[in-house]
Amino acid sequence: MTTADPGSLPAALRERVLEAARQARAAGRPAPEVPDIPPAEAFRRAAAALDGLLSSLDDTEWSRPVLRDLDVQGLVGHLAGVEEDMQRALAGDQAVAGADHAASTQPAAERQRGRPPARTRAEWRRAADRTLALADTAGDPGAAVALHGMRLPLGALLVVRAFELWTHDNDIRKATGRQAGTPDAATLRQMTTLAAAMLPVAAAVAGLPEAAQVHLVLTGPGGGTWDVAMGEAPPDPVPLTMVTDAIGFCRLAANRLSPGDLDVHVTGEPARAAGVLAAVAVLALD
Amino acid sequence: MLAPLVPARLGDPVTTRNPPRRCPPAADRASVPGMGGTDALLAARLAAGDDYALSEVFDRLAPAVYGGALRVLGDANAAQDVVQDVFVELWTRPDRYDPAAGSLHTYLTVLARHRAVDLVRSELRRIARQERHGQLDAAVPPPSPHDEVLAAEMAGAVRAAIASLPDAQRRVVELAYFGGLSSREVARAAGIPEGTAKSRLRLALAKLEAALDRQLLESP
Image (cartoon, rainbow over all chains, first blue to last red):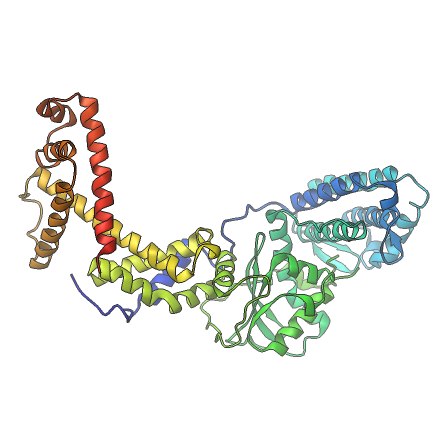
C-alpha cells in the first residue's frame, strides 16, 4: 500500500485518464450515440414531416404569406419546382447546374395559383418521392451533382435538401402560428455534420477577414464537436471554441436567426467569433 | 435553405479532428443564456463529444475525486484507478449526470466514493472466501506486512458486521461462510428447511453489505 497527499495529483494521471477516456469514446461524437442514417433517409424523414404539416393546414392557412412573394401554396409549389430541378440534375442536365434557386422554381410556384391545395400538396409529394426513387437508383452517393450553384456529392445534396424542407416547414409553421418543429436526432446529426463541413466554404464565400481554427461544439440531440480550419492561414494552435445548440446553429445557417440572436459561448476573441458567425449565415440562399 | 456555392472542395472531407491540441484559456467563459450554469454547460459539452470540456472538468475536479478515493482506500494506486473509472464513466455516459440534481463536484465525488467502497467490498469478499476455504494456500504468495494489516482491518470489519446480525441470520452466515457448508448442509445443521436457509443467507448478505457500506462511507 502506498499513500499520497490527496490534494495533489500523481504525475501522468491526467494524461492516463484522458487517454483512457478517448479510447472508450472517440471525441466529437455525441453520447448517447445517434444512429447513422443514410442521407436519403434524412431527406425522406424531412419530406414526411413536411407532408404531415401540410395535411393539417386548412384552406385559409394555405393562403398565408410566408416567404418572398409566396404564400404557403406558392412555397410548396417552389419546393415541387426544386424537386424537378433536382431530378434534372440527377439526369446530368447542365441547365440547372447554375440556375438561380428562386427564379428557376418560380414558374412551379406560380402555376399553383387557383388550384386546390390538395393538388399542390400531391404534386410536391409525388416530386419528392420521385427524387428519392432516382437517388436510390443513382448508384454512387459520392458522385457529384450540380444544382442551383452547388456542386456536391449526391449524399450531401440530399442532406441540403432535407435542410431546406425543414427550414420551409418551419417557415410555414411560423406563418400559420404553429410552434417550430425539430428534426429527429439522426436527421439533425446529418444536418449539423454537413453545416460544420461547409464552414470553410462559408469562410471563402464571406471573405473571412481573419483565419480561425474553430472548435465547434453543437449541444443537444443531433449535435457533436468538430475542429474546422476557416480561412487560408495556418491554423492557430489555440482554437476559437464556440458552443451553441444544434438547432440554433442550423437556424443560423439557414438564415432564420441572426448571429446576434444566437446564444453562443465563446472561448477566444469575441470579434473573431462574430466574424465566423456572420460567415455561417452566408450558407443560406432563401 | 442551406445553399452553399460551388466548391469543388466539398467533394472532399473538410472537417477533421486534430488532436493533440492545446486547450484555450477559459478566461472568456460565460454561460450560454438558456443553457443553465457552468455545470449544465459542461454536461451539454460532454454529451456533444467536446474533449476540451473533459479536460476542464478533470483539471477542476480530479483533485477532489482523487482525495475522496484515497481517503477510503488508503492506497494511491487504487485511488488512481478510481479516478480513471470515474472520468471514463463521465465521458462515456454523460447523461447519467443531471445538473438539476446537484453539482458536478458532488456527482463525481460521490461516484468516486462508491467506486472506492466497491473495491473495498470486493476485497472483503475475497477475505471471506479465504476464511471459508482456509487460511493456507500454497499457490498464494505470503502477504506483505502492509497487506496483513489491511486484511486484518477488513476482516475485523466483516466480523463486526456479522456480529450485528440477528441470531438466526448470524448462525447461517457462520455455517456457510466460515464453516464452508452448502445451503443444504446449513439447513440440516440449523434444523431448518433448505429454502429458509437460502432466504436467511440472502437477507444476511444484503444486510452485511449495507452495514459495510455505511461503515466505509462514514469513515473519515
